[in-house]
Image 1 (tube, rainbow, N blue to C red):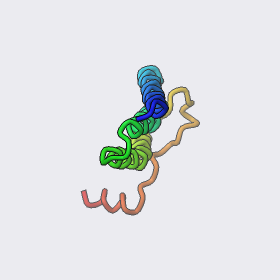
Image 2 (image 1 turned 45 degrees about the vertical axis):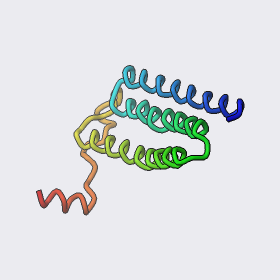
Image 3 (image 1 turned 135 degrees about the vertical axis):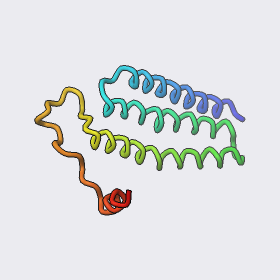
Amino acid sequence: MGLLADIASWVLIVAGGAISLIGAVGLLRLPDVYARMHGAGMIETMGAGLILVGLMIQAGASLVTIKLILIVVFLFFTNPATTHALARAALNAGVGPKGVPAGDRIPEPMPLSPDEAAEAGRQ
């Protein structure tokens, strides 16, 4: 592998590690669940994405690279869905953003979709 590929891969790996570290600090310091989801999203999407791309460059053209591509695709499809599910669950549980006056918050939980209502009726 060439020197340029090594440098590019290590720059991406270090940048991904730095973003993951910044996101981890955000998880500890941010005030509420909605703000913390931003830190978690940074770690999952940008941090892990950059690290995996750096590892793809290190692996070269091999089966390992195909596996890493599949991991990246999986992460980019599942991260928004999990963040949305977490935000909706917090909202339905009555957890509001910190610092927002009670009158400005959504007064009721979000209504269920017809599929969710049917599922809730079966339980």
